[in-house]
Image 1 (tube, rainbow, N blue to C red):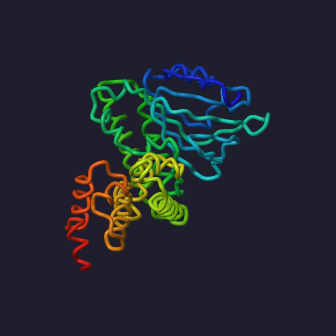
Image 2: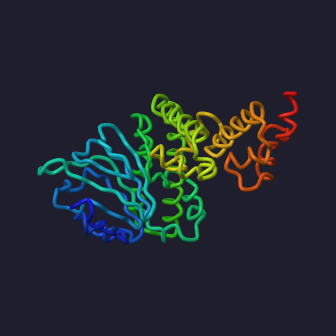
Image 3: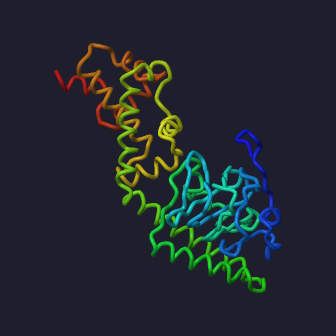
Length: 307
């Protein structure tokens, strides 16, 4: 499929099963599949998809390139990733030979979550928002935990549906998401080289922005613009920074701003109002308020402390 082709949209669990040549789902709003039971991917299948479903994948040894956001994944090790309804992903089979699958796939239609607490809380898990993210790389122990939960969901999925079925499956999904949250926090810490490179790049971007004409021309940089410059999503960046530094992206921007403000207050004769405008503030009062909140001094009081 050409890169410019419109993604193939899948609206229901049944449509996805039909597309992949799978038997009809046992539940119209839920599907959990051991990928080893599927037919291999073929080069003729649609390579760019949009699912109107919550999707959780754990894959290993896939003979195809998988593209999600700005990342390509090779699946040499256990990799887990999450997609919210409406996100685009692509699959490119590496040769004309079929690609054998391994791992698990869970699809949940939003209607399955209707009128449950998870309908709201699932949106609070930031990894569903990682449109340009780092996938979750699992250790063998972590992969075994996730696989066990998937098997529990599968067992309930294949059982006769009764009034307890949905509650049990919801509880297992919540457990899976909580473990994923824990494993992502671990990854932020253990993948130190990659993550500290992002931190260094953030510092360079902010320094260049504050030392250039960006503040006067465009005002303060936004979290969105900084995340785009780093090729990560805003939520992923803030989550990473919270673990590494204890501060959000917005706090880092404000810290760099205060650092620049202190420099101007102590080394120039510009008025506080002029400094506020140079730092991208439309209203000097907003600058005064932020400066005092960060330093416990007004800009004038800070300047006078040098006299």
